[in-house]
Image (cartoon, rainbow, N blue to C red; front, side, top):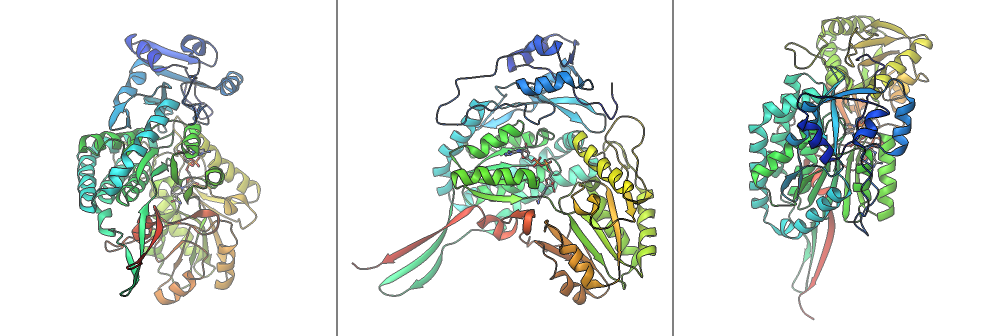
Amino acid sequence: MTGRGLAFLVAVCSAAALLASCTMSGALLRTSAGNALRRNSVAPRTGLLPRRISGVSSASRNPHSHRLSRSLRARCSTAAAVTMELTSDVLKTAEDYPMLIDGKLRQGSAGASPVVNPATEQPFACAPSAGMDDLNDAVAAAKRAFPSWSKLGYDAKVAYLEKFAEEVKKDAESIATLLTKEQGKPFASALGEVKASADRIATVSALGPLEPEVLHEDEKTRTEVHRVPRGVVAAITPWNFPVLIAASKAASALLSGNTVVVKPSPFTPLSTLALGKAAERAGLPAGVLNIVAGGDELGKALAEHEDVRHISFTGSVATGKKVMATAAAGLKRVTLELGGNDAAIVLDDVDIEPASRKIFQASMANTGQVCTAIKRLYVHEKVFDPLVDALVTHAKNARVGDGLTKGITHGPLNNKMQYDIVTGLLEDAKEQGAKVLCGGSAPEGPGYFFPPTLVTGVKEGVRLVDEEQFGPVLPVIPFTDVDDAVARANASPFGLGGSVWTTDPEKGAEIASRLETGVTWVNAHITGDFAGKPPPFGGAKMSGIGREHGRAGLEEYTDLKTIRVAKKL
Ligand code: NAD
C-alpha cells in the first residue's frame, strides 16, 4: 500500500478509543476514509474554557491527524488514494511521547496523530494531539510560572538550563533516532542536531545577563534602561530542524526571564516532545516550559491566545503572514524566521575544488531542506563549466537512502507535500527548457527520496529560480558582470542569506555587503566558526522580522523599560 501517490488513511479516535484499540493485541486497525471513521468516531470536545481559545481542531493541515474535522473527513472520503495502516503497536506509542504541561507529562485530550517515516511512507508512532483544555492549561501554567521565574536570579536560571542540557545529552542517541525516523535526515546529522541543541541550551548563558544600562546619573537624578521579559512566549517550529529550533527558542526565551509553550510541526513532533521528558527529569519548575503537540490549528490557537505576549515563529512566509495578522489583533510581539531563496555568487578567480565541495554541501545538506541553503547559484561564465562538472561529481557520489542506514549522506524529503513541491518545480523548469545534469527523478519504491539534482538552462522568470524549492534541486545560472549578478540576487522578495565565493576575501566582503540579506558569507554558506560568539540570525525583506541567536536573540524576548529616578522631591 505504499507508493508515492499514496497519502494517508486516517482513523478517528479519542484518547479513550486509542487505549481501547491498544488492548486489541496484534489487531490491525485498517482504516479507510469511511468505515474506520465510524468505528472510533468521537464528537469534538465542546464546552471549552470561556474567554480563552475555543474551537481547535487537531486535524487542520495535519495530514496524519486522528480526529478529523467534518470538512477534512469529506475531503478524505473523496480522495481515493487516502489510506494508512495503523497497528495497535503504533497507536500505543503515543503513551511514550507525552506532552509536558505544568511540569507533568500527559496525553492529549484530542486523541493522537500518527507520525510517518518519510523513508518508508509508513506511520511508525503516534503523538498526542492537544485539545483546547490542554492548550489552555499549558498557557495558564506558563502564566502562573512567570512571576517567580522572571524574578529568579540569573545564576539559578543558568543552573536549570545546564541541568536541562545534561538530560538532553543523556538521551541524545534515542532522540536522534526518533529525529531520523520522523524527519528523514541521516542519523549522524540527527545526532549532531541533538548535541548542538544541548550545547545551545547550556551555552546560551554566555550571552547574558542583560544588565540595566545607566544612561545618566548626577546628584539629582538617575535614568536607567532595563530589559524586561514579556511573559508567555509561544514557540512555533517547522520540521526541518525541529529539535535545534525548539531548543534555541526555549533557551533564549527562558534565560531572558520568559516562560514558554512550544508547538512543534505535526510532521516532526516526537523529538521535540522528547525534550519535554528531559526538562521534566531536569526538574525545571512547573509551567516554565510546556510542550504541546498538534496540527496547524493548534499553532493558530496558541498564537491567538490572549495570555501569549510574544510569538516566536519559524516556518514559511505564507504562515508567517498569518501569524503576523494574528499578532496584530492582540498587538503581540513577533519574531518571524521565514523562508529564503539564497543566492550564491561565484567569481571568476574561485578555487574550484574546495568551492564546489562547500557549495554542494551548502545547497544539498538536509536534502536541501535548510532555510539558508544555497537555492540559486550564479557562476561567472569563465568558471561555469568546471564548477558545474565538479558539482555533478559530488552529486553522483551522494548516497541517498534511509537515514538509519550506515553511510547514507542524504535522506528523503520530509513529507509528501514537500516532495510534490520539489518535483513540481523541476517539471515546470523542464517545460521551460531546463537541462537536468544529474538526478532529476526519484528511485523506485516507497519513501520521499529525491537525489541531488543540478539544473542549467534556466534563469529568473522560471519558478525554480524565483521560488523557494526547499529541496535538492539547484539551478546554476551563468553571469558575466558582477554588478549584474548582485542585482539579480537582490531582485527577490526574499532576503535571508547569501554568499560570495572568491580567492580575494576583501573583494568578496565588499560584494557581500551589497546583498540585501540578513546574513552573508564569503567562501562559506550556512555554517561558520563563530569562536563562541554566535552572531544574530534572521532575514531581511520577506524572510523575516527580528533576530535569533547571539545577544540580540536574548534581547528579542524583552521589552525596554526606562526608570527615571528623581533623588529628591
Ligand atoms: P509552516 O509555515 O507550514 O509551519 C510551521 C509551523 O507553523 C508548524 O508548527 C505549523 O503547524 C504551524 N502553523 C501553521 N499554520 C499556522 C497558523 N495559522 N498560526 C500559527 N502556527 C501555524 O512551515 P514548514 O513547512 O513547517 O517549514 C518550512 C519553512 O520554514 C520553509 O519555508 C523554511 O525556509 C522555513 N524555515 C525558516 C527558518 C529560518 O530560520 N528563517 C528555519 C527553518 C525553516
